[in-house]
Image (cartoon, rainbow, N blue to C red; front, side, top):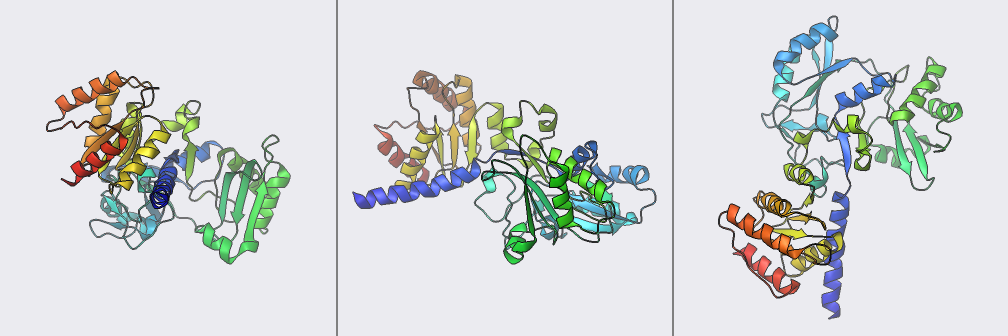
Length: 398
């Protein structure tokens, strides 16, 4: 009995860890969208423009870069490591500095599916469903960002985050390098600048001055740089030259802010997200994709964890976490089945619903209607959860 309990706890922690990783929900926006947003706040950003086809390149160059000899071509995906990436057509690198007359050719080669090499282990993942794997392929590349080439004297790191310890915003900056802050913190801990901000007072001139003096003591215009940091505080992001310029940035927003930040959340790019999660959100369902072969339809996070645990206990692997909640309609149940069966990896589906918060007759009607619409779906009943898990694993293996 003790051995069985230990196995169950071990598997529960394993699945819980993956589930917690994948429950992180945030809106990520593209670099060109972030640059546009920052410019509206008066933050220095490079001159640039987004194009979605080769045909748009010439017009963009004429309007934005009539006198530029070199431009930076940046593939727009919601993941780090673009420069080390590799395209499926053999073209290497998602970021290129090219002569203006070569921009059309480079953009044409970028507008394909983007593939990161399997040997590259990224610290940043594309989306929730990729949180536990090291390489991935994103959806069709739809946008490329063209921007002016900057003569960078030095690259620096700057971020603003919410800090549990200080219970408020915390500016973290480093004057050495603009990437891999974890490695920089390990090698050069003395160079890391941390400035906590009073959430009630907001950023002060003194706060901003600490950052500027730590990052760029020889900056050309100290007063302007202090103002740039204060403006960045309103938005959260930055890098540098002889004046502070946000040459590259990643902005993300907590989904809980969607109801009051509608303009920002309209920037969401669903082509860069898991299509199943997008469909689930439209149907007002909670869905998280995993890597197994048994789909799970449940209501409530606790019941979901128990269901995934017992699937693992019987030798199976959960393919997802799909929570229909306590108010699902028959139509939502049918939509849930469509989402589950759209995953080619799913070989069986285990339905485990707690009747105390959800009407089981609604679930049953939804299952029957889904079975009518989905050809070849066999319905198997079970006496209890243990019996259901055993049958689901057996069905997936057959």
